[in-house]
Structure formats: structure tokens, C-alpha cells
Image 1: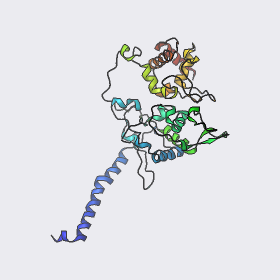
Image 2: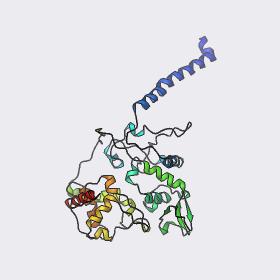
Image 3: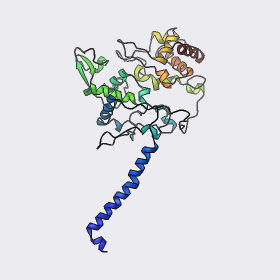
Image 4: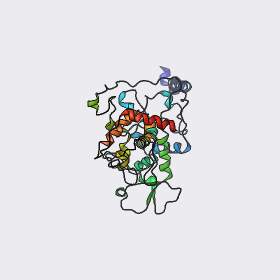
Length: 333
């Protein structure tokens, strides 16, 4: 019992036991993980602005509401092209000696997952408007606004990034809203969040518990089950709004739109697939269709939804017509 009565021996032994346990339970497994999980070849390292944007993302508590993990269940398939794997996080380093915030997988989705948000929503205009006041683009949003990342200027300089904020959200204050450096850095980080393609013949894990595809009549879509209303909600509504009215000065309306109701189907499909820059009247639209890998059937479903909604009366199109134009657009590149 002398050992237990000698506090020097007792605490020395406990300390050495703790060190050995830490070595085998924490340090060696961590080194092994680093050696066995290399970053994907197509992964792009963070730029300096994106790195600073990540620090802002952490400082403002964004990880409390946004995850960065695509689970291998079907309900997560809207957040990325594939479930996440260990290699997606392999190139993420400690911020400094004291802060180990390498990954921001999160634990709660009060807001959408951000794993692939750089592909889902690459628009600089949308992201800046959303940061200034999320209710501008998503009326039901519970996300806090970040107006301190912006400033008001009566005469913005040519180098300033002016944010097209609707009059109703300006509070009657004069001047233009200009994005500050921190706002641009935070958006740079968000735009950098993209799932890297798997190399060569690597097969991505499949999403589990896939839903049964509904019939055409049940889905409200086309023969292959493409649901135009759902595709619009997931890919277009954030900018053009649920009522198709867009946002004045930021995103154009689709209700009573000449493009939507017109006969120039090539222009319409080109805008969906490759985007369009309507500056200075509106912000630039990215090539959503190409980025999201829309099929001809999905493009046709979106067009038919937009042409039969909000009072529009455009002619419905078929997937065959759309595919022919997509082929033509690709040949012109």
C-alpha cells in the first residue's frame, strides 16, 4: 500500500499512463489517417481570400446552422452529386497552433448543407444580397442579416462591388450598398465549396434508401418523371422567387417574360444551360443547367413549368426539341 500513500509515485505513474494512452489512442491513429487519406487529385486548395472567408464563417457562427457533410442517404442527394468521403476533408489544415477547425462538418441543418454550394449557387450577386439580408431572396429565412459587412456610398468607385438591394430593404437611407472586403472574402469561401470529382474509374458510394419514382401524372413532370416545379424550386426559385416576380434591380421576373413566352427556344435554353449577363440592369446568371448536369428532359420540365405558371401562356416543349438545341449549342462552343 506504500505506492498509494506516496503521491509522487502515484501521480507520476498516472501521468505516464495518460501519455501512453494518448499516444496509442489519439496520436498514432491521427498520423495513420493522414498517411492513408490523401486529398482528391481534383481538389482545389483555398485561395487567400477564401481562407480569410473561412475564418469569418467560423467567427460569425455559421457552422451552428450549416453542415458540410453529405450523408449516404437519399434525402442528402440534393446537397451533392455523391456522399462525402474521407478524402474530401484530407486537405483541410488547422487554422493555427491553437485552433483545430480544419473541418466544419457541423451537427445541425437549420440552414441548407454547404458542401457543394459553390456549384449550386455560384452567383456573386445572389450571395451578396443574401448576406446583406436573407429575407430579400428567401422570405421565410431565419438566418440573421450581416449588414456590417457592407457600407453605404453616395458615389461608389469603379472598383467597388455594388449590391443591388431592392428599395424596400434600404430603410429609406440614401446611397448605394457596397460590399466590404470581408463580405467578398466570405463569399469567396462559399464559392470555393465544391465537391471534387473522383479520379479515373473510381465509383462514388451510392445514396441509400432511394425513393420510388412516381408516375408522370403523380409527379407533375414528364415521361421520365422530371418534376418541373421541384426543379424550379431547387434551382431557380432563390433568384426568380416563388411567384416568378424576381427582385427589382437584382434578378429579372419570369412572369410575363418575353424570353419565357417567346418563340426563341434556343435563347431560352442557352440561358438555362450557359447563363446570361444582363448587366447593368440585373446581376449575371450562372450556367445552372450545365453546372447541375440537367438532362434535356429536366430542361423541358423546367421550361414547361415556367411557361404554365404566373399567368404565362408559352408553348410547351418536348425533351426531343430541347435535346436538339442542346446539341447545337454544344457544337457551337
